[in-house]
Image 1 (cartoon, rainbow, N blue to C red):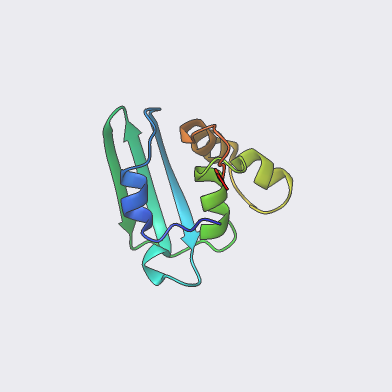
Image 2: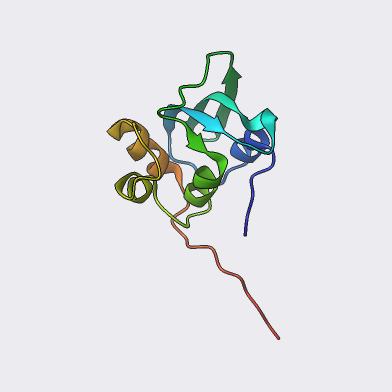
Length: 112
């Protein structure tokens, strides 16, 4: 089980080198600091993660749980859209988010 606690800090350190720019509306029922309209810009090694005062669009917002699945490589954004877990997204947002994700599936190494 995984959880993103500080979305801005997590994305500023996320291990990707794929250039991308997109915005997301994120809903987090537990940590209000993660709620909001976020703009992400990845340009090689330069990263910009900004939270703006734009009101949330709840019709296209993604929960922190679904975003965690995508960023940890457990599910793709395209898969979550296909299964109805994310609604109202443009194909550009899906492609941009899937393009930056680490394609490796998470594992739990257990050596008992």
